[in-house]
Image (cartoon, rainbow over all chains, first blue to last red; front, side, top):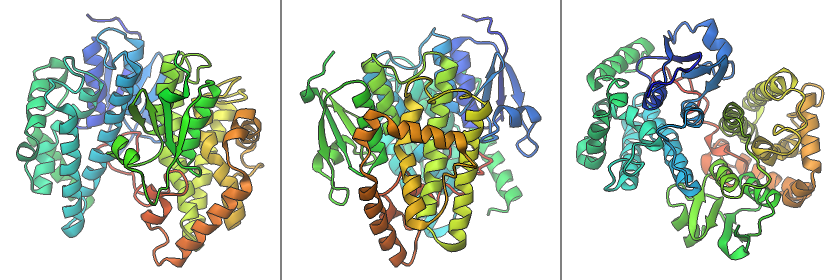
Length: 221
Length: 264
């Protein structure tokens, strides 16, 4: 159900999984918004004004008010537009959902920042950590359809954009997500059947291409 | 509303500001709980079971179900016991409060930890970083989201007061132990005034350990750290201040690949 939302703008970058979380959440709620692509090497005055502390995307601007940090943006979206709730209503379940979404940032994203930049022993350690963290997430998913149970929820929104990076993780880290965490791969495929997800994520090979170009640009081999 | 001690248990450490946050929130809500002091050098099987992912304090056990990560615990407490709310009602205000809670944990905490874990030129750089962070908060107090407020939560202590306040007392401790000026009342008058006011609150006084105890503790840790070759070693700082262990890894957050406000 489309909601005529006044003045919703998303400052974003096409391949950012953090930006994609916001796009998925907005799509799940049927909120119309203006998408603004940022050049991260030449950030707009609007972005620098909207996020003066971190100067990073994504930023959601709603009725002139900027909200920063992807998981905070998703929670904000969930609280403002109450249809198709992403967070459960029970406080304990909400705490669990917040924990695992935070885990994706604290652990998986952190591993990734090491995996693509380092070599040798450090990379081996990053690879081990990444596999361990993915297995923990797989354990949390269990045999559920989604992390949210029967319904697509907050943790699914938080984690699914990184599934487009599995191919990149695998190639950089020399391991197979399918082999290590088959349930996660199956879950990601299920999520891709949702339009909100398939329209927000990019092809994994395109993501990998981007990372290769970035590595060249930054002189990281 | 369950208020009997048997249904609430908190695993914590006396010097952990993360633990103090939860104790303060429970106190503000008038909730009784059983407290279990953890020896962080020899963690109990219960702690390792209830927080098998991070193996850290604090852990709140409510009706035998564990909740971990202090800010998540605070929101859980607020949503379960709705009297004396600590989160704002308005979604935008809530987003702002959460944002600055993250800032406290991802930026200010590690910066303070870096001051504690370094010396010489490195320490000077770390002090600058703390000042940069305090400047941002001062600006919000002076002309931004928290303009004109007594507390970050308004007239009463809110979640951000709890998060920033339980931890900021370390800044004064570091002032003494290392003779660095972190909270300059001239450079950060509003932050300084807020902190003084916060520390005077009855509930806060009942939670925060005596300054002498904190000083002795900090001096001991500092001594131990300086005697090691690598003064930014993560293992020795884990038991000290908020997020000191992540000081080194948080230094370069300039990751163009996966930009986000949350530091990785």
